[in-house]
Length: 180
Image 1 (cartoon, helix red, strand yellow):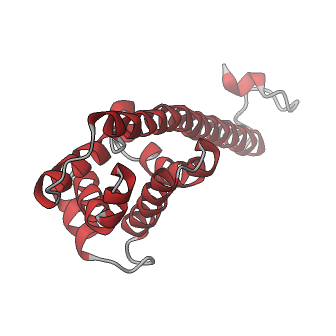
Image 2: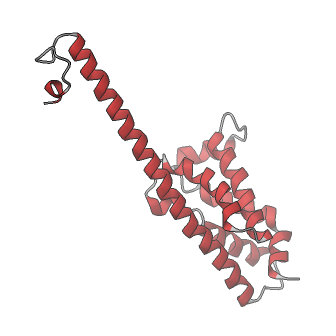
Image 3: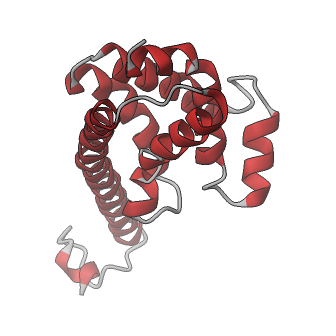
């Protein structure tokens, strides 16, 4: 039995442990809710995390390319990008898969897989981590751009209100009067 076959045999247990490790990266009060509530409408973060982690693990085990895995990765990272994680924490859920695999294999597998096979699989996890970082940076750029646009809209609205109220200093419609 090959290494990937061993992982596939224990896939559901590995997935559950990985999700548990990821949930532990959240504050303790959030972890309780994310763990307890399974409904996708009452717990969209937990639901998305479970669903996409499952797709990532299956994809890694099936040898899918990073393009296909990026879809699930992006869904998780979009959530983590708007939460209070520093970049290393946001993408840090990927290496937790290695930890979950090691823990499960240590408990469940009598015949240990070869080192070479394990190292190759770790390389795939590392590639996923690097892709996650790229996607995370893209998500953070989008969040920043949205915030900048929101600030511009608010500033323009304030200028219009002040002009309408006659408080702009001049009533010629020049926005520069209000900005200064």
